[in-house]
Image (tube, rainbow, N blue to C red; front, side, top):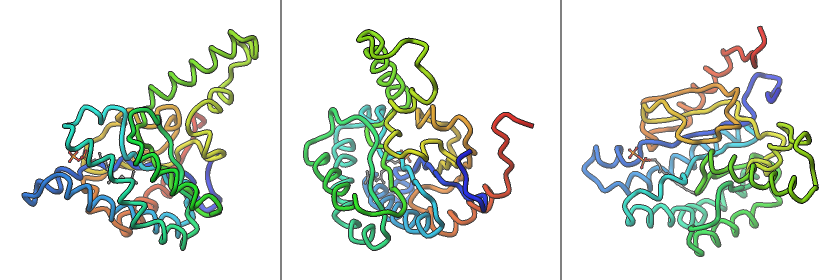
Length: 240
Ligand code: FPP
């Protein structure tokens, strides 16, 4: 299906969990954990790109994260600005292209501007795609696709029987990372073992890897170890 010859994953998706706990363990405010989390993103991005990963999707802000205290939401909205300010030169050096999936509504103008600037600056890069899921939710994504398809049926552009898995995929945010929409390897840090509304459609046949490490402690060696574990697995996609 969606895999390299050496059994390496093309699309790795990560739920970067545990920033808050990492900071609190040291008696520091949660935002300190998010700052360190950005360093972990840098480390993992560089290693994933060296390892030939085609798309690295990171769950940076979910449609449910708006329920956090306003001060924290405000800080999380600043992170793309800080991140791209700091790291675009390195992304350029590594030929990494920035992409974003998620809803634009409610995201502050300055954040949107920083994101589109980074996408624009890296649009000519031909290496790994660093795909941020920002204000993203899997159910909302599928709902949006359903509404768009329904409109097309009502406008007589398509019939109900034209709706195939491929057509649904074309209406998901992840169409922008074709042909690597399907996740091969899903990683979640911090010991939680759940999907939290992340890429529900795209994770249908992915391999899951959970680690107890908190996200700011995630590094190149951990990433290499997880890839080695993935390479030992046998993916059957429902066959025998
Ligand atoms: C989970 O930790 C992490 C997040 C909610 C967001 C992390 C985002 C970044 C580090 C950077 C985003 C950057 C860009 C460019 C978009 P948590 O707060 O849920 O930790 P906890 O489970 O310990 O409370």
